[in-house]
Amino acid sequence: MKSERSETWFARAQKVIPGGVNSPVRAFRGVGGVPRFIERGQGSCIVDTDGNSYIDYVGSWGPLLLGHRPPAVIDALRDVLEVGTSFGAPTEREVELAELIAKTVPSMEMVRLVNSGTEATMSALRLARGFTGRDLVIKFEGCYHGHVDSLLVKGGSGMATLGIADSAGVPKAFAETTISLPFNSIATVETAFAELGGQIAAVIVEPVVGNMGCVPPAPGFLEALRELTAQHGSLLVFDEVMTGFRVALGGAQQRFGIQPDLTTLGKIIGGGLPMAAYGGRADIMRKIAPMGPVYQAGTLSGNPLAVAAGLAMLRYLIAHPEVYETLESRAAQLTAWTPPGITVNRVGSMFTFFFSPTPVTDWESAKKCDTARFGKFFHFLLERGVYIAPSQFEAGFVSAAHSEEDIRMTVNVAREFFESA
Ligand code: KE4
Image: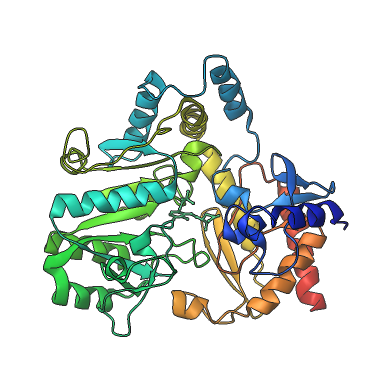
């Protein structure tokens, strides 16, 4: 499979863009080799600049639940282009989108639209601190909530110790406002609340983790977070940027029956355009400017193009709930065969093939994976027209555009790898 043009463009890109990419994971550092420069997408497939076609299981990292260029979204974008791209003023469509989100995710009584998942989680945590008057936040190792300064931390030595910066440029003082605990460990959360409960503004969690690879919540874990936060006057924040409208129409909170105080959304609600949101209990959201003292703003928040794409996406999903049965069935078909020595985690249409013979339930177990062999698997598939996430520690996504034939072809290529390697 030729990649001359990708190689040429990658060399050129690195002269002007750090690492040649606008987001680190795209640089293929996790698997080696040259990232493919993509020219176009349609349905379940993407085509790179050298003309190679791939069945795409990245789907822009989650937004493309209906595949590339779903007609409803493309038509909605064409319509909006006739009237403008951005006004910096309220529009009817953004009210309709907020209403649709509130209706589909009932815990989100009020909604604020922003432009990225990072902005949504950063704003939700500032709001939680403003509402509770407390400073500390609990997060979980292996969960990623965007590049919010205070969340780029790793766990301290002890279980309830304050965070240590995991990125250059994050002040110690910021890192120490976060407690990073093992995902799925109720005991460590109980300890943290026992020791620091009165100072904890919020617990933020990916209710189904996508960012260490796909890791489901252990039975009772989310329920325990709900009880402990309520008991200690802290807020429970579900970061559903990835799981929202993915693992169910109402997200993980619908699938697992838990009502958080605040929720962040992104990806699917923008249909591939820059759109995210945070929202939750009205009494909390009323603290947000201009109603209340917690400031948050954005030039392009609720912009007509992204809102039109998001509205078209959500209206389609609400009108076609059978999409979720298709997603479930295709993803089940993809992961029905588990190769020896591999652990497959799947929730709905998000999945990860972990190169580990033992269960992957948290970051400690995830990081034991054989990432070198994963890299070989990645390139074996890529060379044969299957594009999965270029990192062991990412979730893959099946879209409603993936056909049974796409899945069959993918499984055959994967079998070929395991039977040859
Ligand atoms: P963005 O700022 O990238 O829009 O969203 C941050 C974010 C927040 N919360 C969750 C649960 C997320 O998964 C993300 C972003 N996800 C990554 C995929 N692992 C985006 C891919 C990338 O960083 O390029």
